[in-house]
Image 1 (tube, rainbow, N blue to C red):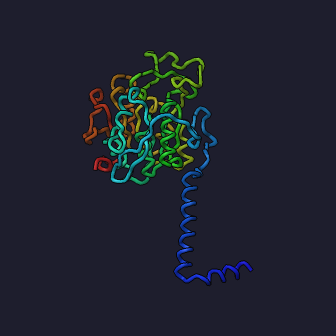
Image 2 (cartoon, helix red, strand yellow):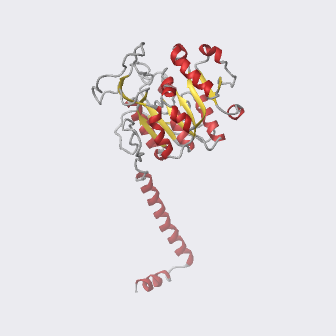
Image 3 (cartoon, one colour):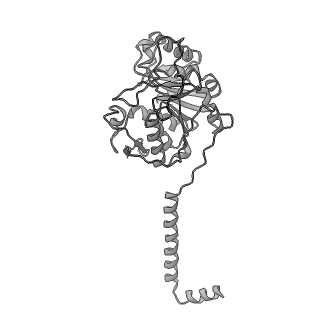
Amino acid sequence: MITLRCIKILSLFNYKTVTQLIVFIVGIFVIHYCFYFEHHTEYPSLSIPFNLSTNVQIVNLTAPLKVNFQCIPTKVLLSNISTHICLHSTKKDKYISRAFQPLSSIWEEEQVIRILQILSRHPHLHFIDIGANIGAYTMFVASLGRFVLAIDCFQPNILRLTRAIQLAHVINRVVLVQNAIFTQSGQFVRLSVDTTNIGGQTIALMNNRSVKYHTKTNHSLDNPYIVRTITFDDLLPILQSHGIFNVIIKMDIEGNESFVIESGQRIFETLNVLFIQMEWKLVRLQENRMRIILDFLLSRHYFVLTSSCQILSFNTSNLWPDEVYCVKENISNFCS
């Protein structure tokens, strides 16, 4: 009965009117769907590998945040890659946050572009960001469409990076871990304080490597300067569960880069790490840590390059530039 009634009503309209009515109804449906999807996007639930160490603190990126910091859209790189970034006050962060200006400038633009170009030329590669800070590298790589494992230990950075990930709708491409990488897992260590470079903390260690560096307790879970340690190898189950076996790494952890090497034997044996971007400025000031990294690079047959792709000699490592690039395969693949 209803069908016959509808047919009789439609017969009163000409073909053009019926077509316009159908288009109008479909249009209303599409607008409603898009609005709902934009505000009710369902993301995959937080997946924790069964064999993951309990010391690894994976951040829940779907948790709602009440924030009072500034988040901005970024400059477009490589013609079509842009994202969001959430900033510290420039009084507290005179380097990274100050370098970001909406739509016009970013932190370490040349280096970020190099990473994006490498990933674009090698579609099988993904990204590990050790010392992610507020996410200058993580956010652009995730916006490129690659998987990112991002590690940072400082809660104010974690909050900003989490919010940026939500704004850019890349939750399903990033695993964010809130830990400090160290030679031992499950320790609580204290970070140094820098009042004008809030992202430049380092683990406050004693000069004598034989003493215990960790605090006796975590003191306060609300103190962002007390952080829990993991080894680099603790993160291997995350990578395996996502089917990640070919990666490039950026590591910038204020002179503690040797801890990644010392605690990551299984990762470096399991994964194909083709390229490492590493800050060298503080490493070259510490002979013991520098030697650990050099022995690793030599044993695994890495070339070490400048930003202009000049090969560096291991005999002059104390004179290497502030940032170096370690390449495992054909140099031309990364310098073209």
